[in-house]
Amino acid sequence: MARLNDKMADAKKAKNDEFYTLYEDIQKEINAYLEYNPDVFRNKTVLLPCDDPEWSNFTRFFAQNFENFGLKKLISTSYAADSKPAGIPYQLTLFEMEGFGYDEAKTRSHGKIFTLTRRKNKSGKIDIDDLEWQYLEGDGDFRSDEVKALRDEADFIITNPPFSMFREFLFWIMEAKKQFLIIGNINCVLYKEVFPLIMDNEIWLGNGMGRWISGFIVPEAYELYGTEARIENGQRIVATNNCLWLTNIEHGRRHQPLHLMTMADNLKFSKHKSIREQGYPKYDNFDAIEVSYTDAIPKDYDGIMGVPITFLDKYNPDQFEIVGEFNHGKDGDFDLAAPTINGKSIYKRVAIRKKG
Ligand SMILES: C[S@@+](CC[C@H](N)C(=O)[O-])C[C@H]1O[C@@H](n2cnc3c(N)ncnc32)[C@H](O)[C@@H]1O
Image 1: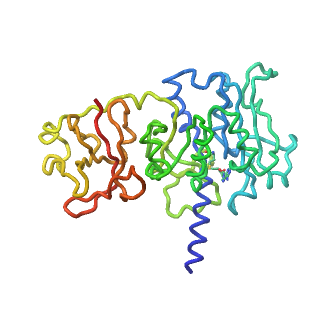
Image 2: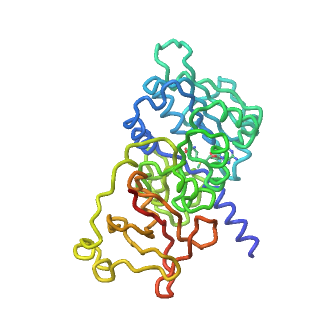
Image 3: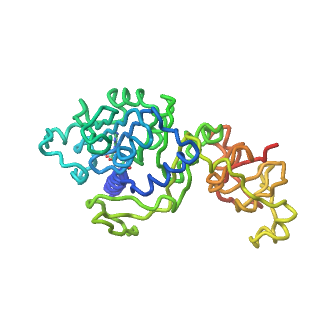
């Protein structure tokens, strides 16, 4: 029974790897980087790996905006149908590939590569119709030498990677020192492979978390296990509130300061009753105060403060420094303590200190 449950959990996990990103969510996020720097993609090569270009809105969005963004090259790669979990069909929705060398047997065993360059074309405008494609030598696994070579050629790696391989995927980007924008689960920020990078300001959150990503398109084969779903334009969409964008591309939001009150004002006027009544208790096992709400961070406190993980969505590195986390107390030097107050464990926190 236990083995059957494990197998079901594995299958469910693998199927979560098949969540596809909505066009409007990609557009909303990318626009924020362009607002900060309209030339962010100019003369650059963008790789969209793990991307099933037949379906992918990432490919559609970047191909449609190829000229607007001044891109040098767009590359998108997909994973072979037979390498995906059982029951995930391949569907030709964005491109009609028959007549262009489409071969069902090869689609099963090989990944595909789509490229768009500045080559002159008939319509005079480079867009999605100019994408050229061919089969990859292998199945399109991002860990293959073939896709690694594409990674090395690119300036930006942008995708929603398979959720079950998030850590490995981020490492794959970081080892090549690339700029990136990827989607992950909110919990990823406390992974011991991820948190130190956030702490050192090597990577940060994108423009929003939770409901900012409005949903994902899921394949028909996906069982919903009671998840909230809607149908739009014939596509099944699940709403989520637990995902975020992770990046190392600059955007304006992370330089906007949080507007905060002093500790004295919070104790008198905070909208949170617990702050007015209990103030800011100290942890039993670490010299830091507990701040249960990001908007109640006292702007004049000089010591270490434990703040909710959602603070990272508002984190401005000019205003605060991240000095560690309060998690298990043993994930690494940065994991300062498993926080308790009066002997009671409290929720995981990010440890911060004000700057200047
Ligand atoms: C979460 S989906 C996202 C797809 C697309 N990037 C999007 O956002 O719409 C992840 C994709 O990665 C593919 N994938 C899973 N394991 C992979 C691997 N080892 N290498 C490359 N792609 C993989 C899945 O089949 C799936 O198509």
